Image 1 (cartoon, rainbow, N blue to C red):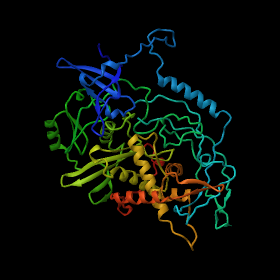
Image 2 (cartoon, one colour):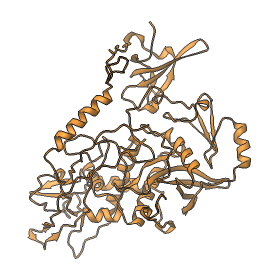
Image 3 (tube, rainbow, N blue to C red):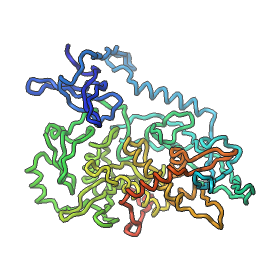
Image 4 (cartoon, rainbow, N blue to C red):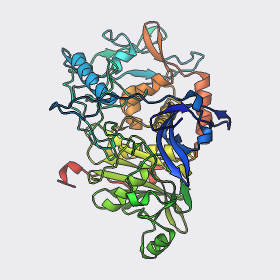
Length: 522
């Protein structure tokens, strides 16, 4: 029985508990090494970073499933030889038709009123009570946002889509909102008018704000890296770099990265940790280091506290470094494609300093001009520095820049699995920190609006509401929406904050935002 590409069968692997398991896997490639076949497998329903080469002993041939033969279909000109419709293309047609049907007859977006917000404990000593205008029946109706019609377009391999066409928003009605305490009505608190929302282009992550009919929107055509599976093929599904040596670390890539073909057959790819230039041998690296004068990323150092520094790098002025950074990042970011035009982007590289120089820890990129209020395009903490608090530090720094700019921001969607976890954790801790610090005024229960939370943290209003829903803080009580902080939530937050030692000190930030709209082509 010959195992060929496309076959599915159980494959032996070790899980996190170091126990044997036999998950179903697909054979993506077969090669012969010294007369012995090895198989590149993708574990079904597992992340692609777990893909690996396996030997025949790990295959369960008794349960093998051979691929079905696909019939050829004619092309538009009636000529044979075209490939059959892929599931992605069929899905695009379905989504396009569904989007057209769901938006026909709807021509405005529900405006987001400012929601008064009160924090309380489980003992109901500080019960927040908020009266929502009668026109809303649920908190979800308040947060729903109509997606504009847009065509699903194929992108090259990272998160790069044409800006979404905004739907004309409905005029916002400043409806008074009453907050009641102790059975007596307080004076009306006018709803804080929020900025009119544009139709967001979001992914299918469960934390994303999708359209009211549950149909995910098309990927954006702007971004340093762009999400798209339409051009996905067998080559880009397989890791092509075996190992990367970066300074004192050896990194095992998770995903495909478009380094030059001649470098993919090397056992180790060597990178200069300061300029990120890739070299084919240790001898070449040593020769390069005698010529390379960099001991830190190019660009301006805009933050330093202790051994942690941040450098701002202009993608136009430092194109080679930016492209090398994108190549390295692609090794650890799935569903992304390298985008060589780095001119419209800024890169913020976090480093750790020692006597040898400033060593890269992670980075995030952002558009110089974002019509969607995105403050992060791509974000990555390198594997040797993960699970040490650096991810949250990168996120916190991105929001600190937004505060200086006087804007609210949100990351580009869809987020990766690890990115989603990091952002959820950061949003939860930051919002709970605000609520825990609220103090009573003249013995009355403290209160705060969603808009005020957004302004204090620079977290976009939609992310604030989705985080409150994720934490299950929103409850319906006597015809009104209230937010309650339970004892478990408070204890869990206090424990998490005790472990969080790395924080951004705004006093150490030396950053002046630029108005890129007045700078022509940057």
